[in-house]
Each structure stands twice: as structure tokens, then as C-alpha cells.
Image 1 (tube, rainbow, N blue to C red):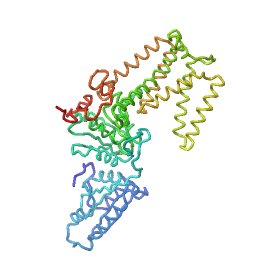
Image 2 (cartoon, helix red, strand yellow):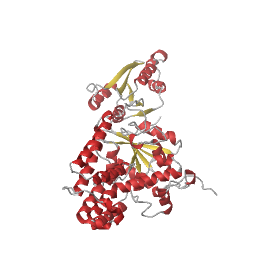
Image 3 (cartoon, rainbow, N blue to C red):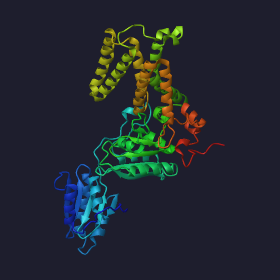
Image 4 (cartoon, helix red, strand yellow):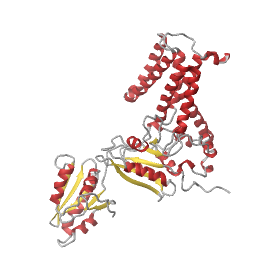
Amino acid sequence: MTQIQDQKWPIPESVNEIEHYMKQRAGLGVSFDIGVRKLKILKKDVHIYYVNGLCDTLYIIQLIEELVDINDHEKLSTDLFKVIENRLVNQSVEQTKMLDTVVDQVLSGLIAVVMEGESTAFIIDVRSYPGRSPQEPDTEKVVRGARDGFVENIVLNTGLTRRRIRDGRLRFEMLKVGKRSKTDVALGYLVDVADADLLNILRKELKAIDVDGIPMGDKTLEEFIVKQGWNPFPIVRYTERADVAAAHLLEGHVIIYCDTSPSVIITPTTFFHHVQHAEEFRESPAAGTFVRWTRFLGVFTSIFLLPLWMLFVLEPSMLPEKLSFIGPNEQTNIPVVIQLILADFGIEFLRMAAIHTPTPLSTAMGLIAAVLIGQIAIDVGLFVPEVILYVAVAGIGTFTTPSYELGVANKISRMLLLIVTAAFHLPGFVIGGTLLFLFIVHMRALNTPYFWPFLPFEPKGFLQIVFRRAIPGSYLRPSIVHPRNRFRQPPKG
């Protein structure tokens, strides 16, 4: 058995005092879901505290049967503490001498067994959190690959990872965050691979979080850890796929698991981590590279297509004669830049409406929006057809971005670049694009250059970004994570 970390108030030897403390601190007798089962074992009072809805009732019934059976097979002179310790038929039994720990563990879904005349309580893990079973994440679907994804249960999530990495050097350090919520947060890493400095930074930041609770889970953790402010570009990467998390662990990354969150945080990450997808690694290197280049093109299009087309509309002399058709062929009373912004917001309205619309109706709503609203807007002269075309292509490029957070950041960048291009024409496009590039280059994610391996340039890492390399040829882990052990497999020859 392990010893739980002690806190403030020692456990008294009187079970009545313990019951009074539970009434004052945990709401026993007021909250309907907090209960106590009182037993008489060898003429001594034994109390079992639990929370309905977080415990597996069958396990509790089995434990009670084992304890009641003591009366029929043991003498009164028997050491009750030792007997009960041996009768607790569970794989996870711990001891504590502190009442605060009893309350925290009971409210986390464990049960506490206290005895008259003993200042030590048993904490038994019989948690059975309400939740769904692992299923494929909607935002990270693949044609071929695993269909199990993370859920809101941290125990299941670490189990999905442990299933893929059965190494004794895989660690899951458990912390509790939030004065009131006491949410379970785990740091997952390979002890002989992960960077010790990064681990120390994450431990320090997590322990320094001083807030009532984190009901929004991993997103709240991110805001405390990286202190992103108004920067729209994601500093960390989220994933709901267990295979993606396991792959990053093997590379030397540190994963943050948060109970109640169906996604995990990958640290550290660069810009190019956000444009990779599991599908690339489920295809052959050639097919994976093609998919990756197509995705890069979509990301580039989502940022620069609309500002570039706006520039050609404002400066038609920049276009060769054979490409003169790119500009609008019709005249309207509404400036083109206003049309672009309205159409871009229109697509955002559709996206938000699709999220909040029941699934059976979302398809019909999309058809109505695409066919009726778009066509009628053109017929009445609100938009020229080219605006709908280019805004739709840019929107598709946004949806090709694997990271939802990066897609939104690219949309914001596109709108800002569009405005400065409309205001200052070619100088605005050039200066705006340069400032955006410099902003991204100067970003750092947990002391990691955000635009690595492009800047600072690292040839091997750059080639692995451009080309999807076959796993048998990938001998080294990425240097950006500063792995203790750089070799993923022994090099040939």
C-alpha cells in the first residue's frame, strides 16, 4: 500500500467526530449524493463514505459483504484494522491519516473506510465516472487507422496511451489543480527521452495555478501555462487521437492530460505541428507527401488568396494580359473589399450555425445557404460571382487546416491583411505579409522557436517537414524537443 500525501486535520479515533466533520465539510446529510454506510464489525463502528454517481455500486456491495463476513469468522480479540486491511478486495487501497485527504478522495469518487479507535482511514478506488466510450474524434477523422479517441475520463485516456506504449519508462505524474474543483491533471512523458527542463517548467506552472476551478479543462490550463494573451496563433497543440499522442510521446514531447477533457495538450509544438495530420502517416510516403503538400497549399490559400485577389482588383495593371479575367467582370455599388468581408463573415455564420443545428437539419441548412442565399445575393447585385468563388476557396483552405485553432488564427490574419491591402494597395500587401511573417517567426512556444525548422533553419528537420519520410528511415527524434535519447532506432551500417 502507498501513503497518500497528508494535509491538515488528523483523523480522530471517534467515528462520530469524523461524521460531524463530513457534515460540516462535505455536506453529508444535505447533499443527496453524499452518503455513509454504517456497520458494526466485531462490536466496533465502521463507516464507509461514498458519493453516488461516481462510484461503482457493485464494488461497494462486494466490499460490504466481505466486511460483514468478518463477524462470522473472527474473534472479538482480533486486530480489526489488520483484518479489514486484508478483507478489502480491491487492487487499489491506500491509507491516510488526514481528514482533508478523506474528503478530497471521497469527492473524487473513491470511498473511505474509517474505524472506531483508529486514526487511519482506508481509501479504495471504486470510481466509475459517467461518460462515453472511446470513439473516433469528429475533428481528426482518417480513412484508415484507429477509431478510438480520448474521452472525458483521465483514467481511460492514460489507459489508451499505455496500451500503445507498454514501456516501464512511461510516466504519468498526477497533480490536482483548482482550490474547489481539485481537477486531476497528469503529465505524461518518457522519463529517458523527455527534456528535463521542459518538465520542470510545466510542473512549476501547474503547481502555481491558484484559481477556484478549471471547469473548461485543458483550455484553462493552456491559458495559465503559456499566457498567450491576444495572440491568435495556437502555442500548444490539442489532439483527441490516442495514436497521435503516443507518437508525440515517442518523439520526446510532454503530454498534459486533464480530467473531464476529451483532448490532451501536446508540448512543445511549432507552427508545422499544427498542419500535420494522422492521415499522412497512414499512407505511403509518396501519398503522404502529396497529402501534406495539398494541405500546405490549402493553408497558404486560406491566408493569402483573398488579399492577393483584392490587390489585383485594385491594381489590374499588375496582371499579365492573359490573366486579366481574374478581376471582377461586373460592377456593383458596394466596394469589393466590403463584399469580401461580408461573404467571409457569412461563411463564419454558416459554420457557427452548423455547430448549433441538429445533425438531421444541418445538411438542409447548408444547401439552403449555398444555393438560395449565395445565388440570390448575386442576382440582386450584393456580390459579384468572383467574390463568392474566392471566398469559398479560401474557406475550404481554412477547413483543410487540421488544427481548428490555427484555422481561426489564419482567418483573422486573412481579414487583417485584406484590410491593409484595400487601404494601401501593394505596399499594404507587402508590409502586412512581412509583418505577419516576422510576428510568427519571433513567436516562441515554451522556449521553442515557433517556425522551426524553417527559422532557425535545420536541414534534416526541414526535409522531414516537406517530405513524409518512411518510419524505417527515421533514426533520430526531432531536435526541437531536446530529447535525452536522440535515437529512435539504431542506424544501419
